[in-house]
Structure formats: structure tokens, C-alpha cells
Amino acid sequence: MNRQAQAAVMFLLGGALLHAGTTDLYLRYVKSGLRPLVLAAGVVLVVAALATVWYERKRAHGGGGHPEPGVAWLLVLPVLALILIAPPALGSYSAVRTGTALQPPYGLDPLPASDPVRLSVVDYASRAAYTHSLRGRTVRVTGFLALDAHGTPYLVRMALNCCAADAQPVKIGLTGRLPPILRPDAWLEVTGVYASRVTRDPVNNGPIPYLRVTSARPVATPADPYDETWNK
View 1 (tube, rainbow, N blue to C red):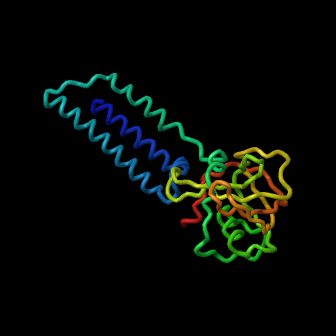
View 2: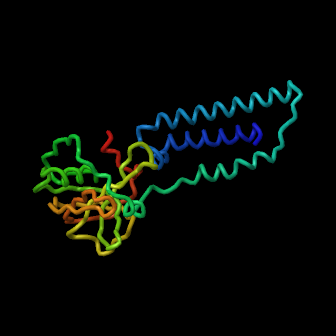
View 3: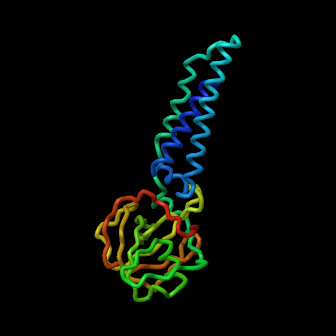
């Protein structure tokens, strides 16, 4: 690859990082707190690309160099395709094949006095599996639906440490008044009450607490499909 093509690839990659960092697209790859680093990396790559083009033109005009063949720019096309086609967030396929990442919580914030209490999947699962703080409370939780090999429904959110590559599921088993059609990867806002039942994940024997559903409604996929509450 000649230097002009290298500069083009750097420019495209830098532009894609800037585009991702100024929109919600970067949330498909890394956690929200890394936005400044994504933007900084984009700026560095764009500046490096422009500097490379400037240097090569100066060398060609002042040093007797020969212009590089323009066909080399075609090398950027597959790179452009890889950059602009964002992968979907991890969903039910990964969730049912990966053990729950739920761990005992280090500490939990006090619950608000009024019901329903809006909780993340991680927060509900932590309280339901390791405390009794949800007894008698009505909660509202949002996640995507996953069905195991036996058709057991779970409400899931992929928990993120740093980036999508390390995302792991946290699962809540669902009982009670469920929708008549359960479609994997559909996002639901579930309202229900604490259920004392806890089963073990067949993948890694981790705890899966349950929620008794009183109502459920479909919702749009959130801008940030991952759950970062356990590392904030």
C-alpha cells in the first residue's frame, strides 16, 4: 500500500471515529465514558492523514518523486465498508450461550419510596439474588427477551466493563403475565413484583433471580443497548 492510500485509510478511519463519537454509534463498541478517547483518536488519525498527504506532495514536487498510481485508492473501499456498516449489539444468541455475569454487589443505593421503582436489569438481579430489599415492591425493568433451549423466557441486558468484546449477560427469569408471543431480541419494558425464586444458569451455575410480571409492553431498542451500572 502506498502512502497516499495509507493516508486515505487513516482519514476514513479517523472520520468514522469522529462520526461515531458525535453520535450514539460508538455505544455499539465501547462504554459511554470512553467517548472523549474515541473523539481524540479520530482527531489524531485525521491530522496524521493530512500530514502524510502534505509531506508526500511536498516530496513529489520538491524532491523529484513520482506520483503514486491512483488505483491504490481502491484499497480504501473494503475498509470503508467495514467502517460504515455497524454491527448490531449482542443479543439473545450470545445471552443463552454465555453464563450470567451476576456477582454479589459491593453496595446498593437506597430505593425510592414510591412504586413502581425503575431498576436496571443488573440492579434488580443483584437485589433479588442477594438481598431481600425488594419484598413487597413493584419494579419496572427494561431489557431484551431471550429464550433458552427449553423455552424459558429471560429478560436480559449485556453488562459492559469496557467494550462490546467483554460484554456478558445478566439474566432475569420471567413468570406471571407474559405476552402471548415471545420473540427473542424484542425489547420489553416489564412491570412486576419480586419473586423469591432463584435458579442456576446451566452455562456457569450463576444465579438467575425471577420477576413475576404483571404487565409488559414492547419498547424501542435504547440508544445504549448495554448496561454499565455495575462499573459506574
